[in-house]
Image (cartoon, rainbow, N blue to C red):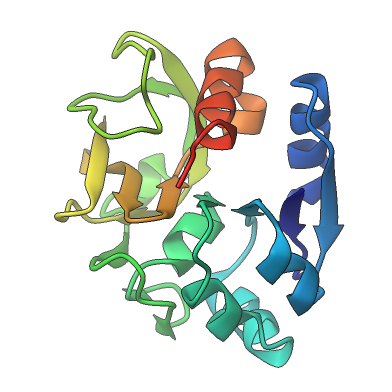
Length: 194
């Protein structure tokens, strides 16, 4: 069973629809037991970091996410909330990935919105994906390059496009909105075995 975490800050239906196109059923839930017992967990996010983090804490989902042992995929704001902290709302986040989330320095060309490729790819999430493939990004904040960086994107400056650590995976872009290459990434995640 695949659980998509619902905390009123995610594009949960588009993620669920993408999984359905791939032949996978997923449940949208904030139920702790359901999330803990899922085979895979997807942690999407759209919105503002401090209010999203507050909703996770109110539902007791912050500690749940930190302690999951099955494969977990953070998407966009979900990825940023898996880092140590975000400048957005001066937010202390989950601390799964050892990096900080910062605001892009040039406000005239923010948000980063549209298609971009990634480079310096390593790890399991991007297997059989080329550095000429493009993903769909929409964000004003970015995760710094760190030891958990598994691919890099260049927009204004280099930042972490994906992160991987143990059973935790994350993408700054939206795989569910990135066409065939995004579906390939989702399949890579869903086929992981631990």
